[in-house]
Length: 176
Image 1 (cartoon, rainbow, N blue to C red):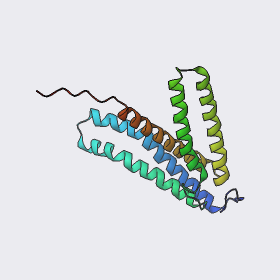
Image 2 (image 1 turned 180 degrees about the vertical axis):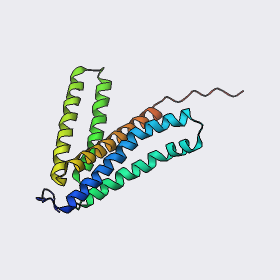
Image 3 (image 1 turned 90 degrees about the vertical axis):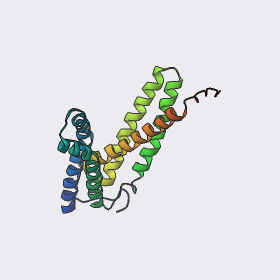
Image 4 (image 1 turned 180 degrees about the horizontal axis):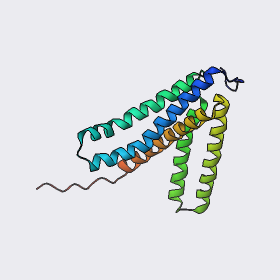
C-alpha cells in the first residue's frame, strides 16, 4: 500500500484491532507492571515473585513490539517504513535542543510556552499522519506511544551522556 492510499476496512482490520489491543495490553504491562515489579523485588523474599518481576519487563516489551508489528503488517507497513518514526527521532533531538535552550536561558517562561505549544502541535500532527497511514484508531494510538517513547529514550540517553562526561576530571593527588 502506498502512502495515503485509500483503505477499505475488511477482515484484516479486525485482526489488526485485536493485535493493537494485545499490543496496548503489553504496553500497559511494560509501563505499569515494571514499576510494580520493582516494588516486589525490594519487598519480598519469595524467589518466584522475584523471577516473575525480573521477567516482566523484557516479555511485556517484546509483546508490545511484536503485536504492534503484527497490526502494522495487516496494512503492509513496518515501524521503520513510516516517515513519522524517523520524524519522532528528529523531534526528540529538537526537544533536547529546546530543553537545553530553556536551561541555559535562566528559565525564561516564553521558551517554556513555545516548547509546550510545539510539543502539543507535534503530537497532533503525529496522530493525524499515523491515522492517515493506518486508518485504525487503536493502531494509531499504539504507534504514537511507541514513537514518543523512542524519542524520550533518545533524549534521556543523550542527557545521561552529557551529565556523565561533562563532569570535570578529579584532581589527582601526588604520590609520595
